[in-house]
Image (cartoon, rainbow, N blue to C red; front, top):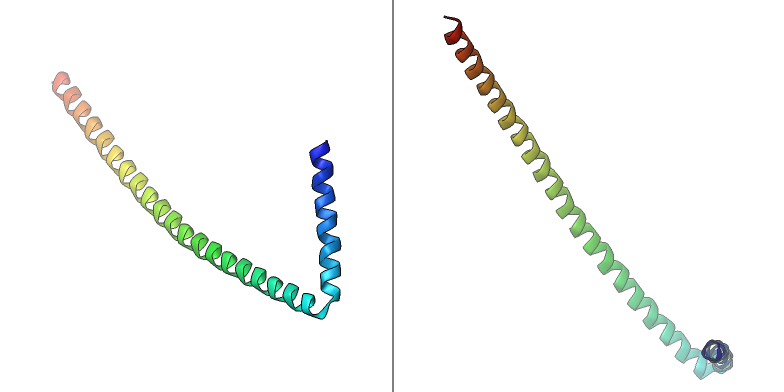
Length: 98
C-alpha cells in the first residue's frame, strides 16, 4: 500500500512539474519537442506493426491455400483408393460367384 501511495504521489508530482514547465516559453518549446518525438516514434511503431500484420496476413493466406490444396488432393486420393477397393471386392465377388 505504501508503494502504491508513492507511485500515485510521483504521478501527481510529474503532472504538476510538467504544468509548471509548460508555462515557461522555453519549457513549452522543450515539451513540444518531446511530444513531437513521441508522436514520430508512435507513428513509426504503428507503420511497422501494420507492415508486419500485412506480411503475416499474406503468409496465412498462402498456408490456407496450401492446406486447402492438400485436403483436396487427400480427398481425391482417398476416393481413388475406395473406388479401387470396391472394384477389387466386386471382382473377387464375381470370381467366387462363378
